[in-house]
Image (tube, rainbow, N blue to C red):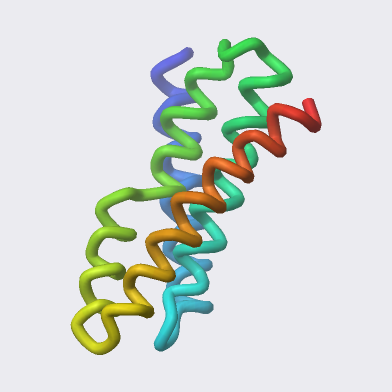
Amino acid sequence: MTALGFVLAAVVGAAARFLVTNTMNGRWPVGTLLVNLSGAFLAGLFHGLTGGSAVVVTIAGLGSLTSVSTVADEVAALAEGDRRAGVAYLVVTAVGGVGAALAGISLA
């Protein structure tokens, strides 16, 4: 049953990511930023509420929603055209992600 929950959570996370990023990404990858920050917040919230035992939801669902490799690709693409834009996106993603996770833990 845990394996089925893992697969279903991964499918939901991946589908949500696809829909949000394909709808919202433009010159600046706002959709990717949104899914990464909301995923970090939810990971923090679930961690705070369950003491870290929400492994299926956190790893499968939120892991498929968020992605470091996508951020790396988007930072590189932004930096090709404007190095400052790439650095700004990286900083906003990293600092915002940690802040969102801490906010989730605090809320829990």
